[in-house]
Image (cartoon, rainbow, N blue to C red; front, side):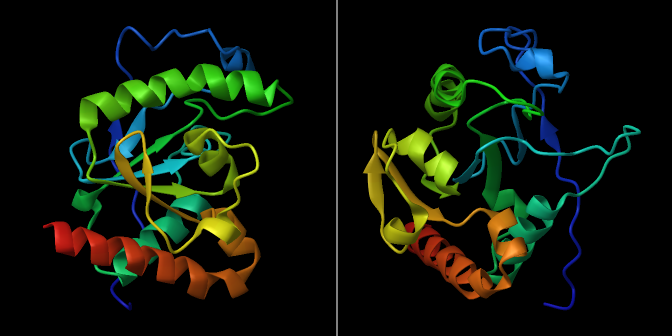
Length: 191
């Protein structure tokens, strides 16, 4: 749509008792903890693998490619930022090697806490890492799971490609957009 302009969504502050979390070891990567962004009370929760970049190297706010692509898709299917809350499996952006399985298992505790507190009506997992972690299935793949709803611990959940995969492979855009249409249609039926 021609009126679309990506924007930096409000960040939800990390709860005080989690700000200094060192359990997973990602604090050693020097990135800050991000709890989530968008509307904390939104009916649709988007789960990504990690927060990615919200600042450039000088500390200036930026809208990274992941956020631009995600916001564009939401806009094109008529979802508003008030409808969406974005959170992550990992609450810090990893910048070097780490024990992926162990760290994801540890960090899932924070996500489970968010799920209990927010109780979203719908969840959209973006990318294989988020899907594998959230579904607790190492073999799970977006390409075979898209277009269906799943009950994951009582939450209506569907999946789509990661926005960065869509940016790198533009042929995925129509599939990505269809997955967002799938979510928007379910959301409208629920409301």
